[in-house]
Amino acid sequence: MENLKIGIVVADIDEYKPFAAFIEKGKYESFTFLKRQGHKFTVEEDGKNAEVISILCGIGKVNATAATMHLVDIGCNIILNFGLSGGISGISRGEITAPDKFLEHDFDLTGTGYSLCEKPLQEYIYFADAKLLEVAQRIISGLKLGTAVSGDHFICDDATRDSLKTNFSAMSCDMETAAIAYVCAFSSVPFLALRRISDDAGDNATESYREMNSQDDTLLSDYLIEIIKEIL
Image 1 (cartoon, one colour):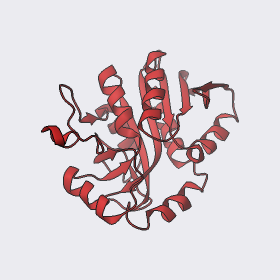
Image 2 (cartoon, one colour; image 1 turned 90 degrees about the vertical axis):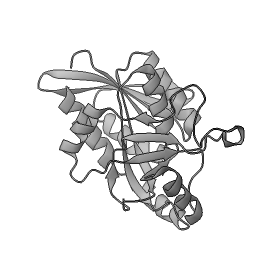
Image 3 (cartoon, helix red, strand yellow; image 1 turned 60 degrees about the horizontal axis):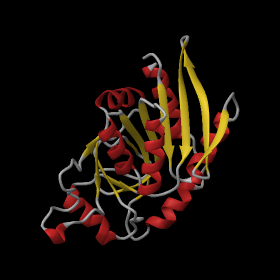
């Protein structure tokens, strides 16, 4: 693909730091976006290259939306995301998922007669790009696809986890992906997220999440670089 400009959105500082350390081993430019860290660098493969712009956006849907819209505004024609997620159903701790469907579980107008997460007069279910999913499945053995639900709430109790399974048939939960997917859907920009399951979103989720988040792991960002090289 010619003139490829890829945006990468990462929410958590502990997820971004090892990726930034990798970037800073080569040529790069640093910048700030809304007082947070960003990098510009180039990925090359077989004489082709892509400009990559990554942003540490901060946790939550508002932060993720702002960073994604900025990347779209400056011309990124693909948006990628990586991070940790809670496992809801059909997936175990340590497994990697590329969600193919995204919903905002905390958007609630049921008091006015709408269905849970339904947004009046607009689409409210968003989808990953099919071609990017195909590439990811070729590269990552055992990659799981399914529904990711997002909300500004760290899920760490059995009852809430089980309600997300019942209401949405959710595979995983996080605090950003549906917001990123929303911007991409309405901007007609292909989107792919890679998320590793850090916990079961239940009563003991906090300790499991903190343990995995402290590992300085580059597995997901390494896979994203492979995906970028594959689509060049």
